[in-house]
Length: 97
Image (tube, rainbow, N blue to C red; front, side):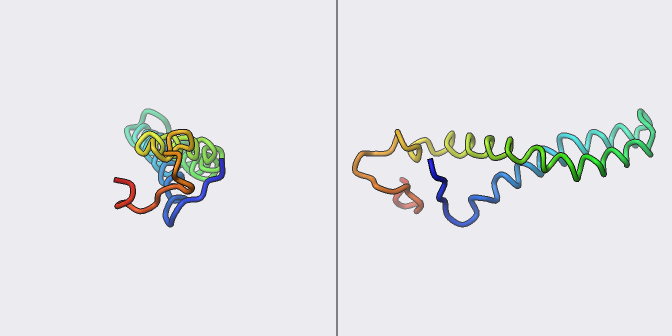
């Protein structure tokens, strides 16, 4: 199924990717480091390493999550759920309602 969306559609996976890395991995790692549960040198080195490597590794997963959330919120835009008389996906908010 080809993905043809309007402006801003491709920002969704980037936001999910950033949120997962920043708030799910880097922030807990920094909290553990600054609370002296792990050495600060390890904390900073792992944070730098993860901040460059994990976004590249998680990007395909973030696309899957983004499409899942998109079609969960707008199920009528799935190909099988569209009305038979529609030949294109709906982009305008007025037409969507």
